[in-house]
Length: 323
Image 1 (tube, rainbow, N blue to C red):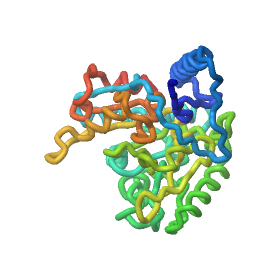
Image 2: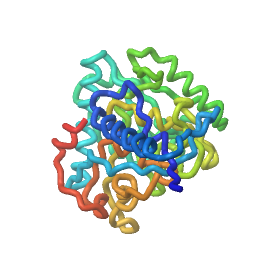
Image 3: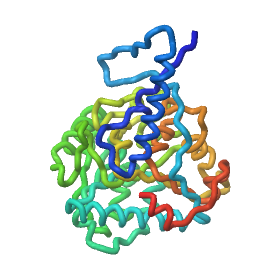
Image 4: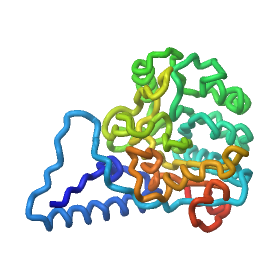
């Protein structure tokens, strides 16, 4: 008897994936076809378990290594590539429908964006949401991503159309209210796909050493959501956080994950985490959530953060062209 567990979340892609993810859809369709042929060859019919919840708990099929991976010589070139991608995605979205929907996390992404000086008036046509955010007073610079982002670049940019939390410590209510605020946005500002999920023009996502993305941490129920809400409360830490769910992260028109820089304590930066997220075929999204974005994201690393993988060098121009 051969037992196979299928990670439905990784294989499930919406019918309305943006054209830039066409190759990802073809890859997934091939995986589904191969699995179907395998099941058909058996003497017993396969029947997927039924569930009335939005959670899928079988997480054992492994994603192929990411293809859109760019290794640049220096941290400054990684920053330059991210800056160009932000501006390029903004101008493309505004040219297409008159508005730009951007999602950002905290952490090192704020540092990257802090040195960006917008070269055009795309900021006035931008709506900003947060990939994740602690349930704290949004004016508290010590812990609130919004306050930190305002201090580092948002106020300087003049970006005012920001979807903010209420500022309470009630994770469930904050998540529900944040989703309601997102749903109140017209599709001209935040498009939806055929499944009713939002499609950001650009989502910048950070990856933790443990593989968490947003506030979706390993081996927790929040990473299992595939058909449920847009936003979930995450109780990994106290105070809790809110986070965009995996299906929202996977549907962005362009998703960018960057890793650059090093320290005495971490001479290779996040090299280990990047290898697990990008290339290790023994991990699953349940135990390393960032691997769920392999086929959705553009990965931009400096040499140190790519040092545990054998990858060719790329250029800023090639990274930007991959969007």
